Length: 196
Image (cartoon, rainbow, N blue to C red):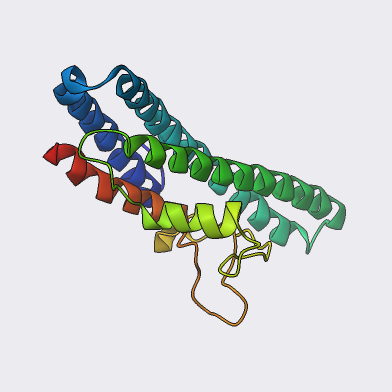
């Protein structure tokens, strides 16, 4: 059980998603081509990777928040210790950013593999797509986001880490946060799996 209810909600949602995917795969396995069997196994692996990433990111986010808070408190009494804690907090935040990007790479690959399976050809995850296209892969395009403003995010608001801030001149974030995007992915996929 995760200490934060928002993270626990997403982890439980992915547990349900993995179980429903196993049922979908079992129902459809006999009708799959040899290539589709390989893609169906890839999806299974990728869903587990996404869940593992979510768990690791949640733990890193807790550690990053704790380290940043300790830094603030130590700054008033021991600046040398505060500097050490700040360095640790920045290191943890760097790992958190790497894991967050990895989640989106794995998530996008999952979307592509899902589209090769029965009943899932036009599956779409808007949050996953937008982060992948406009933030990670094509920030140089006119609709891309180039500013490097990784945010640990507010879990209590259901966001989670964000890879980049709002585009210049806008107040709306393109990246709704990992929690919101993971939830949207699972909420869109679960009914599709049940229907097929």
